[in-house]
Structure formats: structure tokens, C-alpha cells
Length: 306
Ligand SMILES: Nc1ncnc2c1ncn2[C@@H]1O[C@H](COP(=O)(O)OP(=O)(O)OP(=O)(O)O)[C@@H](O)[C@H]1O
Ligand SMILES: [Mg+2]
Image (cartoon, rainbow, N blue to C red; front, side, top):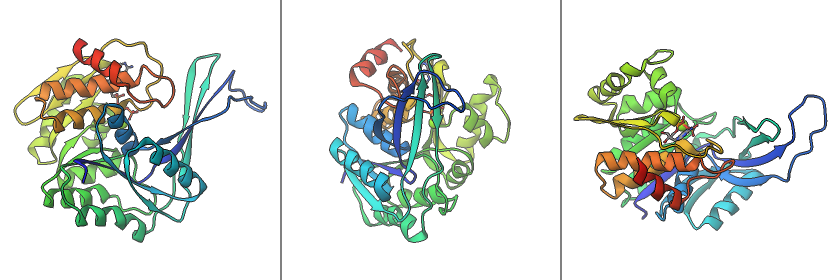
């Protein structure tokens, strides 16, 4: 059994293309699409693979798009536990308008899962042992109970493993209600977890500490895009700025950061270095076009500069 497991309930076949300009009513000539497997947990597994770390990716797949996604995942060499579903895997569209150098991200809702389908990842976690870290990332698709990650949390805890959650809204609220090892909210996600529109900079650490005090998580990493990130645990709050990078696309920054954090934890880095590795991976992802994730050489260079 791999040490790290990722779960993606709502993966996508990401389709990237470019167009001279996005204008209504006209036929738009786009470049041939570049396809990539996507979705929170899948991206974390792929970023880990770029960093030379094995993981096991659990994901749901269905229809023609799902078959393509599965075929592409299989080629990465990542250990996969795919569960077939009735509905089609969604396709997300990323279009770069080259005249404005602006990126448009069209995200589809995704397949609805039946109870029989969404129970399968839970049973897998129940029936297996030997894993230490589980990363549950991304949105909860239609048909799945909102407390799904809370259910994952209670299984993972029984197994003596640690759960890292990167999601938003109600799904995140439920996970925190159950109590997890780590959450990685961005500022918006932390704000809505606190029931406010936007947290003030000076209130971020207190908000994270409150979650820890109430048993919602042992570690809270608040990511703040170009501003960097703050790691808060029971004893301390550590903050680093993001390194200055030649920014190409921020797609996958959050997922790459989560990969860096879980890698640091599994390598038993101290908290400061774990945060540095997370930031280095997140920022390295922004140096690549489209949906590309972090590259190992960039991560190594950035890590030293933080
Ligand atoms: N513009 C940027 N410049 C440098 N680093 C960045 C930039 N944007 C993101 N990053 C890096 O990626 C990390 C995560 O980014 P962010 O806080 O935007 O996460 P997120 O909102 O969860 O992203 P996502 O949309 O991928 O889910 C940041 O902490 C930082 O290290
Ligand atoms: Mg995110």
C-alpha cells in the first residue's frame, strides 16, 4: 500500500486551447486542444509524481471522457484505483485569449453519483491498511452527501492515518466539524468558514487558531496567492511570502501546494520547511502555461529562495 492516498470524487478531463480573441456570435478558430487529467486529488497525485513521490489515486470515472481520463492516468505510472460510474466524467475548458493574454476557465458541474458509487472509496479506505496520509481534494458532486469528507475523516482516524482536506463551502464545514489533521483554505474559504465576507489580514491567525482550538484541524495552512501562506498549529504561526516568479498561469497552484505540504510532512520536515515546500510547489506551478503543475527543478530553486 502506498503511504499517500488521494481521493477525487469529481475529476475532469481538462481541455486547454487558445484563441486570438473571444468575441460573441463569431466562429472562433481555436488551436488543437491539449488534454490532461484533472480534479483536486488527481492533480495532487500528479504533482507528487513530478516531485518523485509515489501515491495512490482513487477516482471515479464514467463514459467516453472517463475512459480517456483513465487511459491518461494509467500512462502516468501513478497507482490508480478507479471506480466506474454510470454518468460521464465532466470536461473542463481552459481558453487563453492570446490578444489579451487572459485565461478563461469554464468549469462544468460533473457527474451525479449514486450511493452505491460513492460508497466505494469509503469501503476501500475501510478495507485497506498501511496508508499514512489521505488527501481529499476538490468539490463534492451531485448525489453525494455534503458530510462525505467527515465520513472519510472518521475512517482515516480509525486507521491511525492523517487526513488533509482541500475543499470549500459546506464540504469543508463538515470536515472541520468531524476534525481532521490539516486543512488548506485560501482566504475566501477561511473567511466563509468563519461566516464572514472577507477576513481582515490581522484576523487570519486568530481565525485559524479558533479552528484548531475547537478541534476542527491540527494544522491550518492559509494560502494567499502571490502574498504567500501562513501555517498555524497549536504552538506557532509561521508565515512566508511567495517568491517572485515569471507568472504564466495560476491553474493548479493550490493543488501543487497541497502536494508540497503532504510531501514535507511525509518526509518529516519541520513545520517551517513543510510550509516552504508547499509555497515553492504552488509558486512553481504558476511558472507553467495552462494546467501544467509544478516542475521539480523549479521547486528546488524556489525552496532555497524562500
Ligand atoms: N501570483 C502568484 N505568484 C506566486 N505564487 C503564487 C501566485 N499565486 C499562487 N501562488 C502560490 O500558490 C499557492 C496557492 O495559491 P492560492 O492561495 O491562490 O491557492 P488557491 O486559491 O487554493 O488556488 P487554486 O485556485 O489552485 O485552488 C500560494 O501560497 C503561492 O505559493
Ligand atoms: Mg484551492
